[in-house]
Image (cartoon, rainbow, N blue to C red; front, side, top):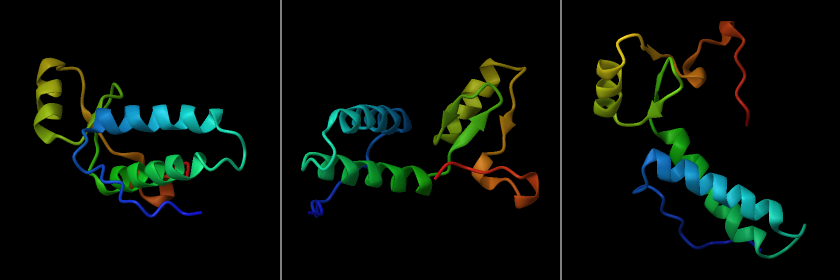
Length: 101
């Protein structure tokens, strides 16, 4: 039974998306296999994954990540030893980096 309700997550910040995804994964792990409660959880997780994939996430060498360029700029200004690093999904295939699906 697919969940056809809209799952609009476009208004959530990166931190909110990550927290929602973490909370939903915990909920899904507690659901019984084949349970109807898993359907809306999986639909919401799919919406979150699609939103994260569509955003331009910027990373710092320390692991800090944001989709707000001004926030990263402020972070880098406050931490002079840090630098922006390339997102793994943007690496050329020659680097051999594989992302989890």
